[in-house]
Length: 111
Ligand code: SF4
Ligand code: SF4
Image 1: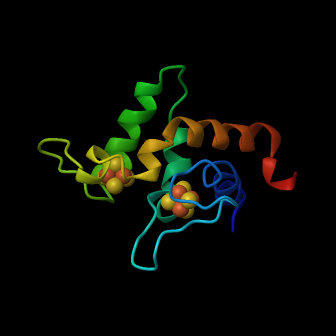
Image 2: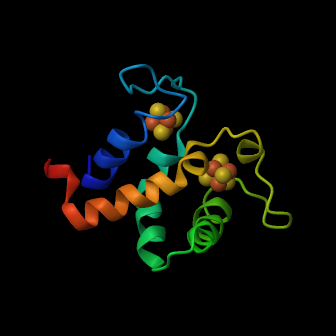
């Protein structure tokens, strides 16, 4: 597992509603977490933006992951998982940005 995915699982899974008390993911084998699936692209998205404005990161996420790789309808920007608060990547995106930036700054994976 690379250092970003390790840090994301440490930080995000522990607060995710889809994890148990020990931070272990409870998704079934038929379900896929976008944080895991797209972690490489998420890192690229975060590294592509340098701003204090969260909306700029969200726009990059929608363009480079939601539309390009996942299920968002480009015509109307609709994603039923996001609408149902059922996408961990969308729910925890501010924490995900912070975690990646902390890895870059402090190399959290070695702690
Ligand atoms: S859904 Fe994703 S973020 Fe949530 S616990 Fe499972 S792997 Fe972690
Ligand atoms: S918000 Fe929707 S389109 Fe974007 S990553 Fe999550 S499930 Fe995929």
